[in-house]
Length: 157
Image (cartoon, rainbow, N blue to C red; front, side, top):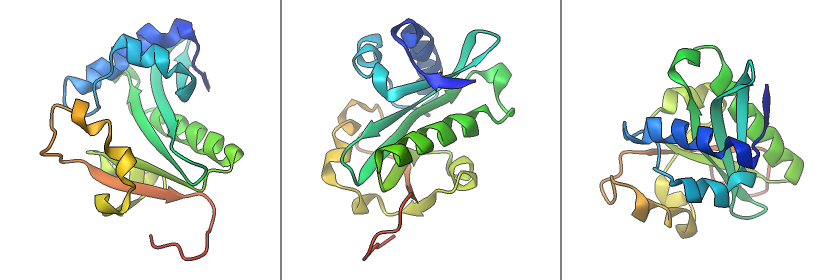
């Protein structure tokens, strides 16, 4: 079951994000960062235990970022990651957001979720403010991908 995260989920989210950030797959977040952005997060539960998470960070009515998508190892391959992505996409649609992007090293997964690869330079400068926290900065190997939620005139993607 995917649901919006609550404060009691923060430590479980921290565990999942840390698991993947240690492997260089996610941007590291402190527990404090997670508490501050808890309203951005959703979690997936299995038998009452948080086993996955994801976040939707809003930049404008045009653009949001899907970030911190993680599923605990024993639960991978069950479609939970896609459920998290779908939940965040539906939330973005309900808010009227037109495009959702992701920065990832696992582009195949996001292609299956309907995202297409774009040039990183096509994203607004403000999306890069978190890059300074990344251990890979400035040698980033992430791929920018975007999913258009509503057709707009003059779309360049």
